[in-house]
Image 1 (cartoon, rainbow, N blue to C red):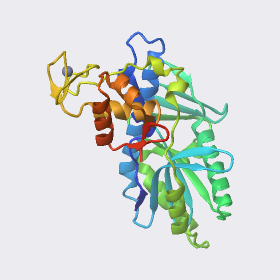
Image 2 (cartoon, rainbow, N blue to C red):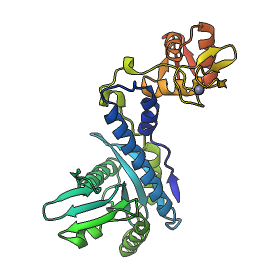
Image 3 (cartoon, helix red, strand yellow):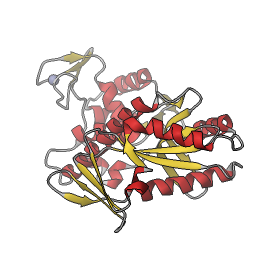
Image 4 (tube, protein in one colour):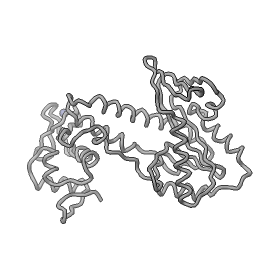
Length: 314
Ligand SMILES: [Zn+2]
């Protein structure tokens, strides 16, 4: 049973909004594109694993994309599976080519045909998630909960290689298609112990889970002034549609649109700040009529904060 469903991550939405708004000669454009691709690939891998996990028996509660806060830190997990026997963290990795776990040197490398790169160790990452989750449960009066973890390799073409202790890695890392069976097997071995308050834990987790967020402009050293303003043409993608009487007109492909400004406003609220003034609206959408700004912002569903003279989201 899916208790919390995955939606497109906020960070990925931010990258989608950011890329068309950076000038083509922006110095850090390649880094931004790299991060966008990484986030997109990660999300696609998570969706692939969702497909396999949904076949778990009904009493297995699945929470996708969980972000929790302990007193010290915020941590994020791709999947939690909660049963009366245990909680299982399923972390998703989407890699091309070949991945190598070296248990002797305690190293992890990825080899995609061209380069071998050392990555931060996936097992260390998920172990950290486990200790954070343990702490979170303790703070909510759920002590002594068994927490297991798996690393699901989402792409069936990825080749897994182990140097050293194969058995140890095989207990943790597997292709997505076999993860469900591994979770069920481990749960069966645990049955007979005192049953956990699985529903209570599941609902507390869902209730407290927040949206994982990050200031990506700051992360890439991008200032507000670097962002290209303008309404993007839904047909040809060009920025800077012209405001005409009934909507927007594209100077390049001649397409007309009534509501092309809504995605520009969404970009602004996502990337810049969660509120907007009339003058910022006119600057960002590139037109000059205060009454039109007021109308568009109201129609968009924003509310006017009179004291601060700005439009806010509900
Ligand atoms: Zn156009």
